[in-house]
Image (cartoon, rainbow, N blue to C red; front, side, top):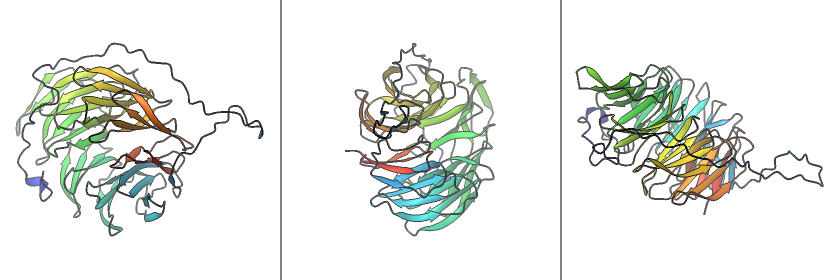
Amino acid sequence: MSSSDPAHQDAPEDAADTYLDPSETYEEYADEEHDHDEDHPMSDDEPDEEMGADEDEEIIVDDSIQGFFLHTSPIYSVDLHDTIAATGGGDDLGYLWDITNGEMISKLEGHTDSVTSVAFSKDGVYLATAGMDGQILIWNVVERKLVVKLEAGDEILWINWHPSGPVILGGINDGTVWMWKIPSGAPMQIFSGHTGPCSAGSFSPSGKNIVTCSEDGSLISWVPQTGEVAWKQTSQGSITFIYGGMGLIVDARFDAGQLTSLAINPTSTVVAVGGTEGLVKLLNITNGNILATLGAQTGDSIETLAWATTLPILAVGSTDGRIYLYDTQSYRIRNTLSHDDAVTAIHLPVGGFELTSSSMDKSVRRWDIRTGKEIARRTGHQDGIVGGLAVSKDGKKVITGGDDTVALVWGFD
């Protein structure tokens, strides 16, 4: 897909060398039961004898280096580009902030319901804010002005920019997926095939594929140029479509419950998808064949997924408070990282070994994926981190959004 006219490119070419070789196995592998260490709650609580503090009172040390305090409702989404941060919250507002001095750059008004997603375009020229009001507002970051309003008619559940051009995807509560050209705002495609809310989706890193999933349990790969379904996985089986022809059910092994999250590997050859039943499926992105089922979780919902670029590792974040590091060659757990409450977001940098995570336990933590060891921990939120996290390119700054209505910036060496 080119940045000039993505709607008129040739159909996607077959992926080259697959990250997981589908010729070697399509068999599902279920991990053996994994013994987890018992949870150990954070033990910062110590009674203040001089003040007569209650023994159960929680004392939170604020490690943040910057904070943004103008939101009046929980912050549902954050993003970061260079020194500019964006936040969106339940007060129907978005903001742009300067993370070097904590100053507010712009107040982004125009939504009539909660702003649930914010995302910078890859070059940082545009910011998209998406809301429960069914609108995506596109802002020019440099000129600090609204460019265009995109109307989808129902709640926007997620947004995703094309990796190399001004094109944006939006997943809608009615099950559709929309693709718009920016800055004109012209709809390029409306993808229709899910029967339940479209819970997650993404362009592939190559920009040639679009994969989305739904609460109805279906996973669909789309042809961006035509809007057609390339293949579709449902609990009833896999349907592969020949362009302009009928689909054929060829498999009946795909059943992961309501699907909640997905991630495509760096070589754009494998998609991982997770659901409410604690399972993760790995599929060949070209034909939809199932490569593996990863099932060592406790049955708690999968909230977030991320692929490493330096090791054959898929990181899986769960509401059981753990992050599972899977070896994608053996399909076995390499390490398990433990928070004290549900994991809400994880980030793996390009070319690095340090995973950053946020949790409802109010902490931000950094881990070495080679050893599974915790490197650093930051606290300061007074409530769970519900707005996820964003990490600077050099990894030294992290921003998170909390249920406490505050966005905090953290420094890492």
